[in-house]
Image (cartoon, rainbow, N blue to C red; front, side, top):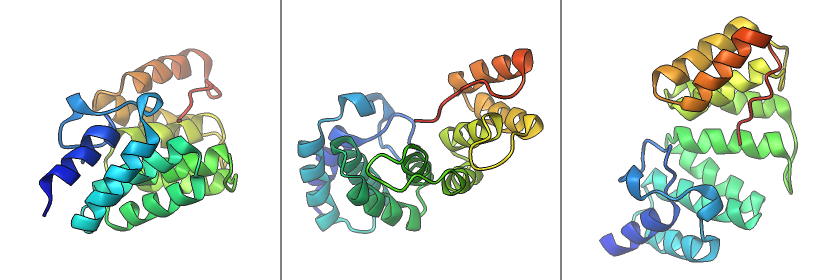
Length: 178
């Protein structure tokens, strides 16, 4: 195995909220991701270690950053099939946004549920936003509180903020998963 190839992909494309990221302090925010070098590095890493789910997720992020959403979906789907909760979140986001991709809020909500059930806080937050803002189904204040609460317990500050807004104003806080 070429450790350098894997480290290059990790250094260029890992997400700070992905529990599979080897070093979250070295992770890259989506807006700062340099897509072309990241995609190249992650493709090389996958050629070396095709069973490592985080590499497919990171390749998906690189494609996603480029706006190549069909390619992003394929990479995220492979990561999801290998058990990546982070990939499930990002597939839900692709369906939610619908940019150069199928817009389908019901599918987005379903993917957010799958991500939440893996225990990933970002997935819990996204699933809560679906209940909060009637994405892909009816609003449900109890379910929104439950999932925001679970995400907040795991340190997700934006979930704590949304929970406060939900308590003050009821559903429809406008909290976004993206």
